[in-house]
Figure 1: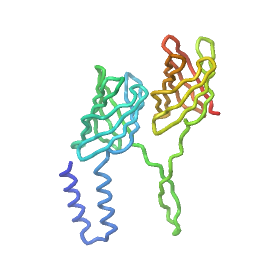
Figure 2: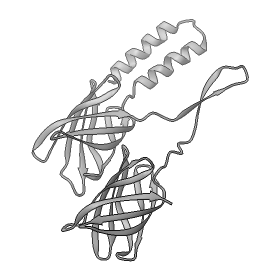
Figure 3: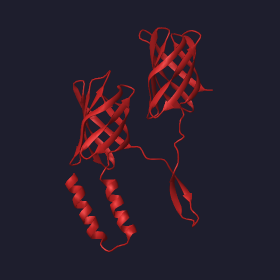
Figure 4: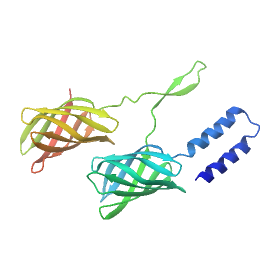
Length: 249
């Protein structure tokens, strides 16, 4: 890979020749950008027995070494081990605290990462699309449009929610206080029936929310999606399973 970068650099220099500094900068800038197609945040889809499981990757390329982290509602947070990007081939192993390691292999195709993964005795496919940085177009004094970075204020999760857990014909009201930080969700819960609680293992990825509500000596696994401004999904308290929904205050 380094040899390819050096060769490209030489060709770029020869092509620029006596051209202007702006042309040279554009050439070298394009080279620097194309030499690292891996670093960044990725929205990932794992294909598992006819269903799609969303996840996120945060990858960093250093030479031929790849490091980073991963997260999904199914596996929880994980770290990248033995990562490499050589001859257009990506490979690494994801290690988790509560899930078997996942061996990842793939390549870059049409701007997406695609490949196979191995875990828990089976092999299936995965793909990932890189998250784009938020930009806005702003006219300059000369009337030319120029892209300027803007902060990402899209946070539909943080705040207070009036939730209702329903199972076996009984509805239990719960107040959730959620806070989103990147893909991580933290917060608390309050209910007359369950008492106060805390949220753990919270994540928000690909419009899917998941967390564990620890309250009254029990843990309730909660998953759901945001639709029409409301959260709705399922919960699992072991022997008791049901549905839930929430509306923001």
